[in-house]
Amino acid sequence: MNTLSTGLFIFFLSWNVFQNQTYTRLNLKAFSQQITAAEVQLIDVRTPEEFEAGHIPRAININILDREDFRAQVDCLDKDQPIYLYCKMGGRSKRAAEELEQMGFAQLYDLRGGYLLWSSFQ
Image (cartoon, rainbow, N blue to C red; front, side):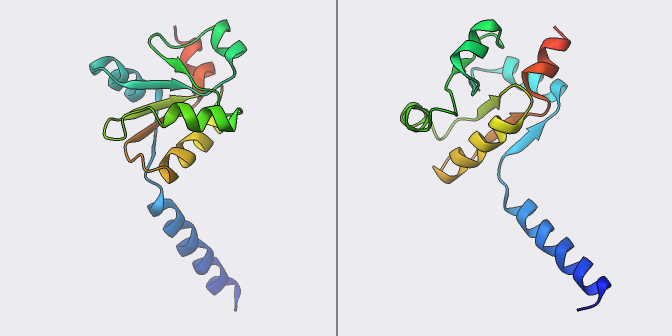
């Protein structure tokens, strides 16, 4: 396979992976507008200590690092309603979105930049 063929193969493979992703990463403005527009399921996936140090109003804390408890708590959420996720910078909320997606949740939104970005504008 030549360099051009390899590059095209990687591009199409990456595009296919991107297209299969059902959660959406939102910028701060879109995330803020959507969580204030209606009653939403807003989840902070950081540790309880991080949550206590500061969080977005009306968020509930479901720690992604405690895998068993995380799965048990999200099982109680409404799969037909949108879920908005955030963590410190975006890594853990991305993992949470992927896990929720596997559990059958379809409307998932992740705050790009996480709580660090949110708190810098509050």
